[in-house]
Length: 230
Image 1 (cartoon, helix red, strand yellow):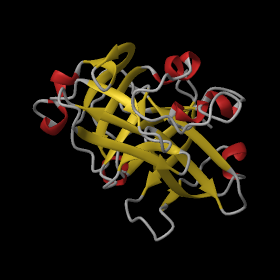
Image 2 (tube, one colour):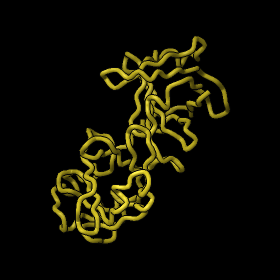
Image 3 (tube, helix red, strand yellow):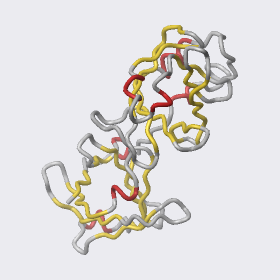
């Protein structure tokens, strides 16, 4: 299933040991892999802002654009003028005086977070989406269906998150056999990815659309499948 894994993973030993200090040359392949448009957004579902990491040189690192969109939702980042690798597997946003405004650190395979854990830096946010989904915002009743509208199952997501980071779910009594056999019981969100899981290791992964519904991750294979809010 698709996971919004931060592309700094490209900095493997096969390319370059990621111990660059500010001002050192970065392998062009790594730089290109990291560049792109990102959503910076709080985990609590409040609005964030998009900015684009570019490959041109700038004071303290590399240029970026779009940061003016942060003035209202995340004013502390509106003065960012460049970005760079921090030499420890993370990424920094810097102002014109080379002051570090935010440091995004590795987060066990998930999108990088700021050091206080309150913000994600996310690639490929759906168009028009400026905030992260939360357990509370997704809780409720959904329909699992084919693209043509064929209903396969009703899914109710509960917002009560356990110590394992998962929340319970329940299925309607009329689920199609291929869904019922998965015995889905809990769900989890990571960035814009939603995963439904069963106790025996079965799972279905979905990626959020711009309209707030979800499509089954392409990495899952099989027939297309959607989760549509009732």
